[in-house]
Length: 133
Image 1 (cartoon, rainbow, N blue to C red):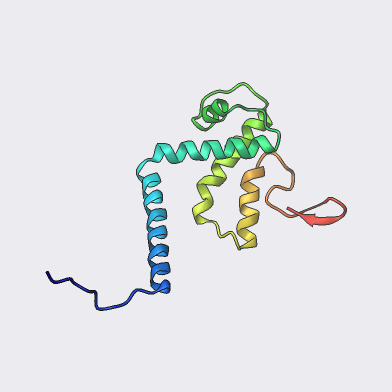
Image 2 (tube, rainbow, N blue to C red; image 1 turned 45 degrees about the vertical axis):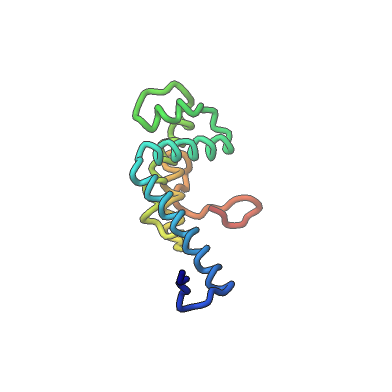
């Protein structure tokens, strides 16, 4: 019985590269799964918005955040409802915003704070006289 031998020898570097390729293929597969299931992606976005706003003391429940995003009437503080709407609109723009561009950072901040802050979308003076966003 003849055994087939590959025309190369495997090395640690080669095995590391194969592992890296496999890991990247897994990431691509997971991303395609989200793309093929828009409801899953939307649910993840809603959970992310709810969690982020909860840190900022927004009192709306997950189901209320879902209802605001779905355009339904929600009884709650107007400011908190606006925060949800703004956060969702900002998420919708993430694929066209450059995270390294000051103009896009200000644009995202402007969407997040529209109707909530006087200096929406601009650097403002605060916290000890320094500039902040």
